[in-house]
Length: 538
Ligand code: TNX
Image (cartoon, rainbow, N blue to C red):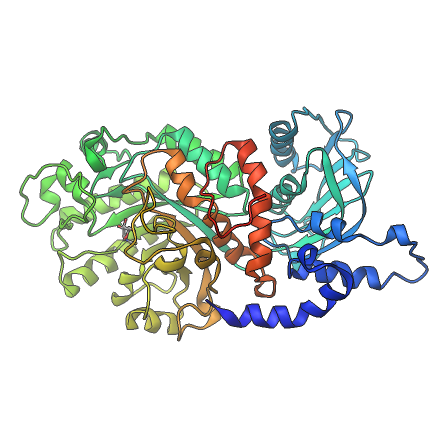
């Protein structure tokens, strides 16, 4: 447990909370503290009547949000959503307004029209220059009064994140009055879905994206190839999808995405302010590619499909020029299929079949091929042994002591995405004998998924090296969307909060209550989740 931020924040806030609110309403949250402080200091000329002081219940109603916002100040009263409400969108904000209308229909059954009229009850305001610069590109302000709900942001991404806050604050048809200002701690807040071990339909992938969007995740990393399946069509290499796509763990029929399928996923993610980062895992984890094209491996021998869960021992042949023609075709296909993403993940993990010299030579060339397609390369932490391009990002997935090569790379300026297996891996079982998942990194209960800090989890790494966090979901044991959600919820929201919220909001008891508050929404949306005994479900 990363005790320090927790202890500091408790010491700083407990007195205020205890003075004004009950502890259960305060939940140890900074937001309650801010609300309490603000109500104690009325603006000059404003006289506060007793009824103008927000009650503990008002504070609690504004405390429902995951990830915890930067500040929240409850006011008295509520906004009531009725069929007479309309949604105003500033020019450029119409797509977010359409999403908000769809979400409200899903949650309340009310079909609210959008309007150009700025007197609308719900307003989405784009203020690219005139807003609050401290909120940055993804931040927003939400101001709710008994007569209006106003979201203001510099970008549509900020408005979209604010919409997620509105969804979470809505209890029945009521929204608590008050003001929230909010912005993310880290630029990169990702989830990863492994569609190689088990294939997931486009509809399932979209549902997973939608569930992650509720927690202000902005990167969707799609693990498109592994030993057990190749899921992307590559021009000039038809057998990759046709043969390499025909397998999965356990011997099922697998599947693959056409360019049109991936466009549908990318467009859907974009409508949720998320970019899709494709991963083609190389030079190890290539069993499906080698099954389709045996000459990609140095020995060139044909073998059957990999359907077991253990990592295969195939590798691309680093000394063959045709390997790099293949790598270039695959990288180009992945880049072409995912417009809008600055990144492309080249894998690089667990290439046991190659010695270090050959592995490093491969990684070096693969990075250049990614860069040639105008993408910033991302690679799993092992790639830190190779000479890295200045812009290449490493994704740390290991547990315990970091590899010296990762520390050295970070010291030289390499940025890191933190996905430590013993905190952020959604495929690790929350408890022993759980129906799904693995436990090579130990068990990861919700409290452990929540209790870490990306800037201290790797001793020796400077905070400025940390680009953000990711919650990977490997699918060796995951066969359906419901399985995926059962492993992801409620731990995905925990990791999303680690990525979004300021460290001074960190507080397990408060968080566990806010998680419990999410459950009615998951029930309504049909999101499956694990009823962890650590969470005080209502
Ligand atoms: C390690 S994490 C892997 C994956 C497995 C995962 C299972 C990483 C880069 N490689 O191939 O699916 O463990 O938890």
